[in-house]
Amino acid sequence: MRCVVTQPAPGRVQICEGGGGLIAFGLPFLAAGIFVVLGTLGLVPMQAADGPPRPALLLLGVAFALIGAVIAFGRRVTTLDLAERVAVTQWRVLLPVRSWTYQLGDYRAVTIGFVRGDSDSADQYPVGLKARSGPPVVLCRPTEYAQARDCAATAARHLGLDIEDSSTDHSTHVSANEADASVQQRLRVRLDGQPSPDRPREMRSEMTDTGGGVRIVMPMPRMNALVIVGALFPGVVAMSMLAWLGFFSRSRALTPPEWIFFGVLFLGFTVVPIAHAASRWLRSRIGRTIVTVSTEGVRIEERTPFRTRTIASLAAPDILDVDYSTKESMLAAARRNAELEVRTMRDGPASSTVSSPATEGVFAVLGAFLEGKGIILKSRRGLTTFGEGLGDDEIRYLHAVVVRALAGRT
Image 1: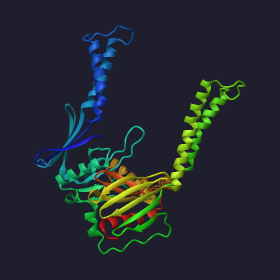
Image 2: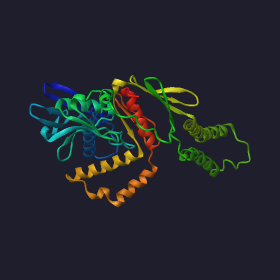
Image 3: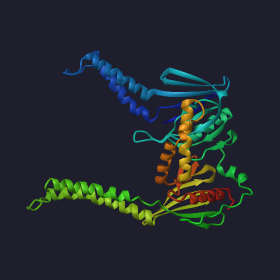
Image 4: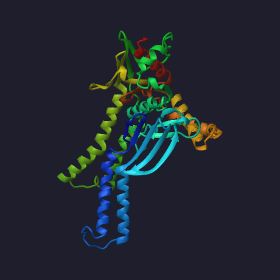
């Protein structure tokens, strides 16, 4: 979702959500609806044919036109007015349709959350105002973390509120005057006098001191055996269909078109999936992720059996925070989100239902299949992750090493 932040007047900040690619998606619906309406009214010539009656066509055209107008021109605009101490949210389709007003004194922080998408929608990072009691107010729902962070920083500076970032497993709080500060500036003070972390007994990664930084070579996540089964499945289905059609039981020689058909089918459903699975298996066994961290920034490279390429290169001033995700922290975050959802729905303390034996059993089953996502770098360019599939102790240790290397405390 596209989110634009402007300052139309002193003391006022506007956050507009909508537009962008939705305009191109909605205009065809609007044009089709207008054409059907004009044709039904006789203002545009249409070829006569048996079909729905004119009233039904008219209603269909109006519905298409309204849907297209809402998609193309619908906007959700939130105005943060310091003079009136209110936040006004309007739903507009060229003109205001509906509005809601909230008192700014009832809110104590600007939040960044995370809502996982599905097959029909993208991941979202909703930015909102956290209430002292009651549900939060959503300001916008960007699909990119960098855009969400920029929107939250602008709102926090304008309102003088802290930022509460819960987009990853561990929530972080940043004051309004540090909204644009890099993690390097904040960590140098926090790490003074703290001892170096203890190295875990079992580590799959290799570390090298680069003189002012650290170089970490990590194995890539192991490929699940189900991927190999999935690669063989299309070939088995294709061969079974050919056998069922009697393709292999013919006594005569195959004609050239039949050879071409068989060759394309064998290549597309057998060779290509198996080659892709074999490449992924080889990459997971031999490939490495190389991370170089220093006070200058972080560079992440991927070394495969055939080449080495740079995945990301982030300058230290652009890195806003460093988090980590382990199996333990993922379960804790899921439990926290469930409790927050219950608290929001019931407008009170979390119910004991959240921590019931049945719920805990579900979490235990999920924990058996989870793997840590590794280290998460939050930057002005978005989220960058490395170290997926490592053990929890190793992920926590590498997180501490990366943080100290960025702060120059190696």
